[in-house]
Length: 443
Image (cartoon, rainbow, N blue to C red; front, top):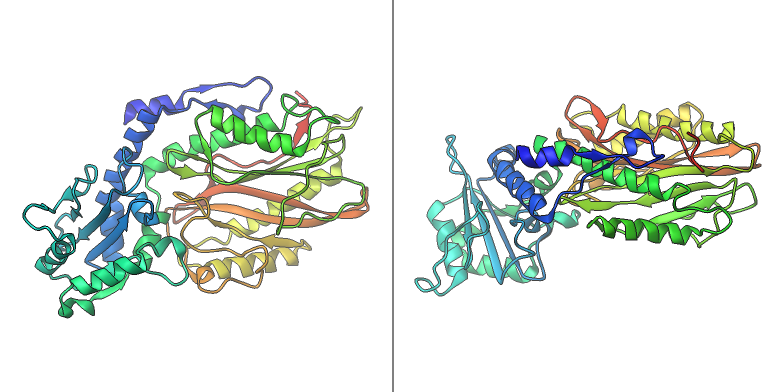
């Protein structure tokens, strides 16, 4: 593990970019796999026992199959598995009294080093009967399965598999089957220290790609289109061996009459011109973790060496809304409480905010509390009522509308950076964009 972290910290500089936008060395697939497998073992030794005891559940059963994988199970598979094999049944049992968890695979194979094979087809041809026998022998008080009405990531068991499970269990155990929603969310949202050490470099890669895209190395004003920058972000990620988890957005706002960006559709491609305010929305997947970042750049007019002061101030107002949001973080505070307190505080300072922040980690739009949606600024039922827990990561995504006298119009400064709540304080995983990028760079 130490060797991999040493590699992860190896940096090389890209000429003309800010120091914090240097590109870390990208780990090989083998190194990434070893890293993730190590995290998996640590998570089962620390995260899972704590979650099961927190929720008062002594057995967690997950059933999935190839090409229809439970989102939780996918994050529990070893790095050498691309997905479930045949019908994969995982069973986690907490015997209590400080004893270690039992982690069993009612499957034809061991599932990595965590789940041990607990089914011999030659001895018991019926896989469902074997699962029922494993459960019955342990006589659990509560049997959690991944079913949820509102949290899609916690709703991984198919209707067919749920019905088969209920048929296979003895009648006496049927009433012990409960929703594992909070286990699933807790597993997905909780970050361990080893993950957070590497998350900083993951974010650094995402920041460095944006810094390249928002530079004269990619953009020639009057020639380059926003759509070409979008595809640069895609191609550059692929060159580095990385995936993007959504198609990026690049758009412009300019002093001429133009409608504000609409969230319900993609912006049209436009030729980038001097005087434009550029904005991107971009996210990568690396080492099984995701980023989600929105940053901004200004294209200098001839003779300019800095962005107009009113644009600089508008950007600062966006950062101020971020500060108001993260300053309200606290254990047990719900997403809706954060939304309402942030909007009230921002409006009290004369700002015009819109907040739509979300958890991030194994998934880009991760499990945990929803902190507003762009079209639900009054609050989000159920998902917005979920509370903050320590050791969770968030994409602080929002915008602030500002009237620019020089442009005689409103603009939206849209910002998004990923950060971590450790239970006592919030901090950005790899900092945030404090100043607008300038194109061309002014060294």
